[in-house]
Image 1 (spheres, helix red, strand yellow):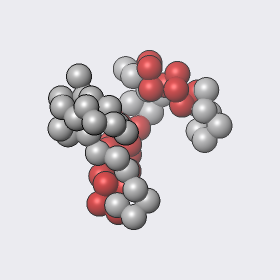
Image 2 (cartoon, helix red, strand yellow):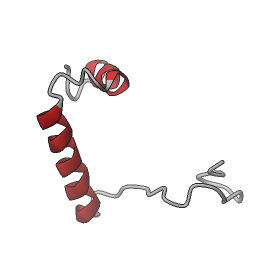
Image 3 (cartoon, one colour):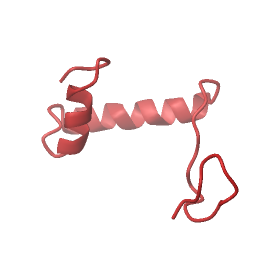
Image 4 (cartoon, helix red, strand yellow):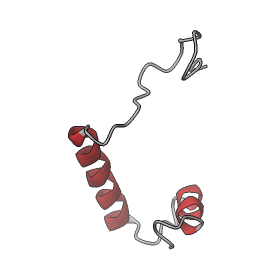
Length: 62
């Protein structure tokens, strides 16, 4: 498993990154990925879990 985020058990998924608003490269990559996803699947029919999360969010009702 990935271990604990705030603890001593640190093993598993080494690709986990904690985002920071100052991490402009990560923000740009996430934005580009979201734009590609919506361009290919604007209704998110191929991504029902993501659609459900966005539909229940205040940020972007789908």
